[in-house]
Image (tube, rainbow, N blue to C red; front, side, top):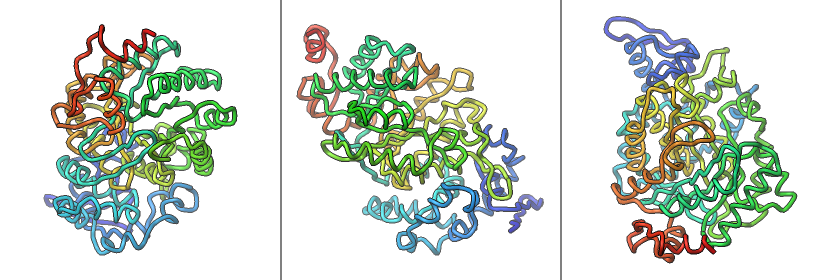
Length: 468
């Protein structure tokens, strides 16, 4: 089907839903690289106008990636909940935007938005995000509540958790332990203590898992640990009785992109069941930790959709959330600026993408977090990350990632520091996960309001325990 729209006396034509979606997307370098971005602001406005007038039912009838050739599309279509979709089935994309904003302002917003999550497809959510301002994305995401739990509860209103990321370029246990202690003393680690290993070998992964589990049990910390090795490596370690809490995997929005990560949907389902069978959680049994990022399908050359046309990277990112949703995860985060300026060029594009990803994931029913980050060759800096962190805190983000000094010396990119987590909690009145906060308070590391107290090296209970 061809779509037409006139802007400022010029007529624009779009030959498919794929093209409309791509050209309505706010400018980003990845879509320019793929050759699917609008060529002017006027063309983008025309595509946005067309998109706003499309019925939501179009996304059930016309697929951006073919059903016959893509497992993610089949997951989306076959799993669609018509009953949950019924309350909004009559709406256009523009009508959905208005409905979401009105619902977000209502007293029962969280229950209403939760009720339609299974009726929304990733393409619908991506489409509406394209015609929303940043404040719209924030307002709706803030009104949406999604929780998950393992040893801590993630996603409760008024709280923001953190992944403590103590990476080390050689997996030195002393360096990892030092970074872990640093983060714990500043109240980080309630989402997960998660290590990106320097090698994917089973032995190295096992050594790190034993290290983290020893820290947890020695200090009786209500936390979950994860070593971010490939899902097959972690499944192998489960069979060897290594202490595995969470099962990690990077995922993407097309079958081909997932294949580039070495995974299939059945493999992910098997991994979920394997980790859940261990029964290691105390307050819940969500065991999957999944990471995504705009541009992953394009970087794998797996971004082509119906008619062989390139699908925009934000729509493909939203499709990854369908994969995540099927696995009922504890944690999902987009590593928003990690792939580089070829996909998100500068601070403005990273900020917009972070808000989009958070909005789309949360609206689809995921406990959504964001790695607020950028690479050193991007046109971005820590001021941009401060802005995104503050906006995400306002939007009710489930968790963020923090590394020592905001500089990941193993992966070679810039993220948030432990101090940044303290900042956003203090300024916005946010708190850590309740189970973790109770532990901090019990050790005298936090006051009754959850505020982290200054560390006295001579008196800190955690340092004293470490010295033993």
